[in-house]
Length: 225
Image (cartoon, rainbow, N blue to C red; front, side, top):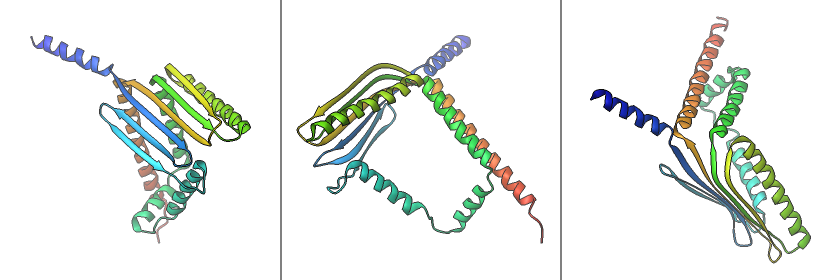
């Protein structure tokens, strides 16, 4: 009886490991005379996320507002306040070897490649409307939008499995506006999610160990007064 219960529990555990976890992501970029902004929505069984970034400014276009906002954040945070904790962190990173930073960056690339390898895009819809009062500019922007979508989908399809795809770019010759909505459903098996989390945890532990070894070695070679 115990063996039967153990076998059933083991079978259920293995079945759960190979179940798919689905996530629906929706990104909307809109720029017209009344609104300029970006909307993000993430929906899954265990997680809900909605965020809106309003960059409406009659003097600037959306791309200009994004660049100014990013530059403002970098400018504000480029010089943190000088506190004992900040000084401790700065000294820690100064003693941290550059080779470990390069290895960490390489491992991030390997992690992304591993994640995309087992990621499955069940459905991807990317609809855009490009418009201006100039017919030549509208046609040119439409062609650029098609080229960018083709390049992005080409890279994505070479890295992961893509089941259903729908792309659309509509020109609007009546008013200057841009509206692009990307909706996709991603899924990955539970066992692959666990492997990615274990990979990240192992990398963080190794990063901390290497940092502690470097700090200990730097203190050991300091000359005594």
